[in-house]
Length: 104
Image 1 (cartoon, one colour):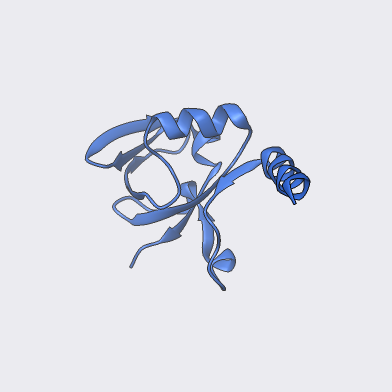
Image 2: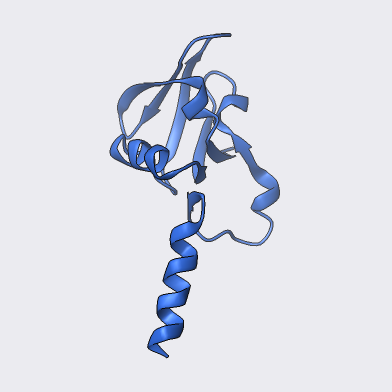
């Protein structure tokens, strides 16, 4: 039984994203942070990226279950967001790895 648990941990370690367990039907609602319009809010569902991207976003407070508001988005520059009352600027590459559920 202990070996089975260790095998499960190894499989989870190799996954290429940080996520919370999906509720039925949530997978279809997951959109990239870049698809939000200015002023819209969303809740982080998962982060698709390597260990470095997940670590960086976790340090900034962007973890699954967190509410994000898009403050400003220009065509080729960074994306301005609000997380837990703090304004952050994310590069477009890093922002594209954050998948959210649009909040109504």
